[in-house]
Amino acid sequence: MAKKNNTAINSGVENNVGMGFQKHCTLYLLLENYHSIKERKYFIILEHLEDIIFGYLDEKNLLTEIETFQAKKSTNKWSLNKILEILKKIAEVSQTILEDPLPKSSTFFQTNYFATNNTIELKSNKISGKTYKEVINETNISVKYSDLDSNIKNKILEGNTNITFSDLDKVNLETLTLQFVDLARTPKSQIEHLYGKSKVVFGETIQDHKASIDTLLKYLDTIDSKFNQGGIALLGDVTKRIESAEINQIFNILTTKKLAYDFWREKEADICKHLKISFLDRTNFKLHYLNSFDNFKDLKESEHKKIYDFVLSNKTIMGKHFDEKDCIMEFIEEFNKQTTTTFRDLQLKAVISAAFVEINNTL
Image (cartoon, rainbow, N blue to C red; front, side, top):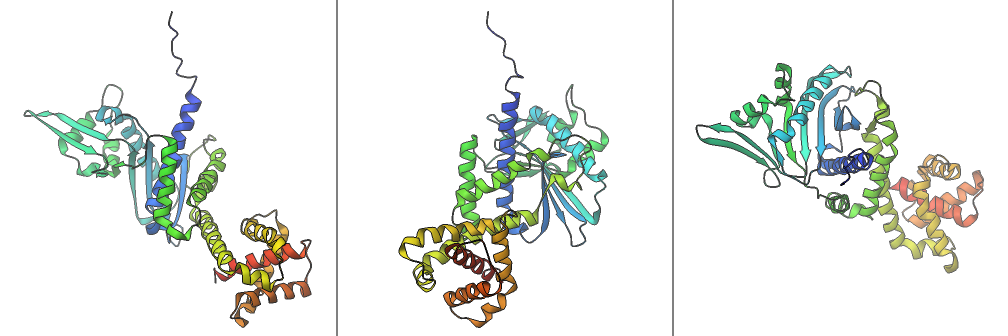
């Protein structure tokens, strides 16, 4: 006798794959819109109210705009009947956002997306022998519900035996946009696509685009435990949000590393000669120098933080010099006059050099 498939066995695995797509989609959307949103104050929410939420705040921390994404991967084309349940949920989430107590500006508006990496094909009933059709794919990536032919809308609003749309649902569907997301079908290909997307967006300002995407994905992984904890889902719950300040810090670290590599490549010989770093010690010096940029952000690395703060509080020294190596040397001399460290001389010189590079490039 043939065994019956138990669909519950792999449900956890399937959920992880789906969540993987949602994370990849989040990064895709972030990179796709990065240049237009990088100066705005925003937050991102995953798996809370909706798969993905981008919320935008004004200078008074009032919510001015919300974008939600019901993000679904698929190996098959989406038909109208297949997305009815999704559209029902989107309409309900739209209302939940309107009722959410997070303070909103007088100009607040929301756009709620069904986003997928496969074709969406919507067909109406036959009207006088004609069937109306709308296709959303790589050649027609975004269509507003409000712009759909009325015959297709009517077909949607008919629902089916399991899905019905209330009058309130019908109003909230006006916020819907159907969007094709240009991501590959497999997780491996999606990540490779994101590597390329990062290179297009940031160009040479980031040294290692693979590392940049891997860093962002790991960051999303670390906040998984903050989601799906039960209770009432609220936009204002900061434990469920990734703030733009955090995202900017990640990008700043990544771009600072590029500056650090460039500085080392261009100045290695002069800096090492001036600081009396022997050829035998240069590998260790470089390692301490490059590791410092991460250690400055690590609260456990108190010695790195102390040295960074010293350079920052004495940055007036930079106004006295026209040559980097002379400036770094004075920071080292002043540090040794004023304080002490558990670091050996080689590491101290490397860390002060790194602090100089980072602070000098943020002035």
